[in-house]
Image (cartoon, rainbow, N blue to C red; front, top):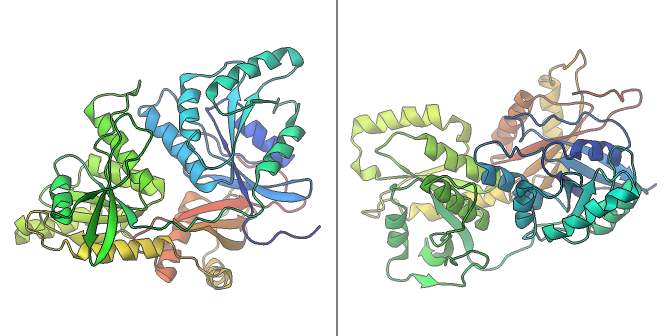
Length: 447
């Protein structure tokens, strides 16, 4: 068989907990694999597995379940479904046919219907012909024909794999080149000066472009000239979607922020320099990182600070924004216009990093030396070996580590820090996932 080169196509498995995602992943792989548990706090530490069917290799990713009892249900569903839409070539959406379509499934289906990726709807736990009528009811999700399977018993799993491979593109999806001005989300908690900044940027030249479809009240975007270049500032002020799980104005604000970030390529998170960095500020920054967008942090009202407050702010930044040391930072005053022109250069730098691709040879030469000096720690008495790295994607840069075993989150953070030291990536999040390739005689499950 000819060895496939380059990044493998990615198949993302999404759905609620306990619908049989992990069982389906194992069925795709043809063995019991070390599928990460749906444990709160580790949903971003995903492990990818390489699968082989009819001579074709592809990557299977279990995105982890969302918990309908957790607070911020809508945001949780959105993060998982958007992650799949952003990184996968094919999305497999698993629903428990015995339970039927829940509110959570319906909410996820609404998001997945917007995807430009192929979505295959799987009605799991159809163990016999009598159960197939349950599967037929899932047409109501609006995702086409439900595919009845039993992941546990293997019923129709071969047909499903054939269908998945038919949907896989000839080559993994490359980001399409998009013309027109770069898209910027201006986000931040209320009263930090977003409107003042947008008005300052727009001056009297504000022009309205095509409205964005799909919202109850269609928001409009603004084209502004900054640093001699046109930028498209995404405006979500019109978003007033009614959501069952809404809990007050803060939820609506969060939803509008999420929509703006998803529609943009780079986000400017505006913070008030004369106030401490709040939990709400942190949440907005987290939304940008989890959406995989380039990030510029702008401190507004800088002109109002005295020397003491500036020193104090530096200490707060060191303490509260330590996890985003890589973010581009600029000090501005929306009121006076001071420093606003510098925004353009920060936006350009962040976007350039967001689209950076490191040559594989250069990447591996660096990482081999790094791993030799600091190998990954042993887990369960056995130290995993890193075989090689590849950059699977850009916008944001996404790296896949081929390893003989699970890599602890701490070691992945170490790799990220070192990649940033060597290759920059100033102003962009980077994602590192692990692809476990077990050698012969090393097939035991690792939880």
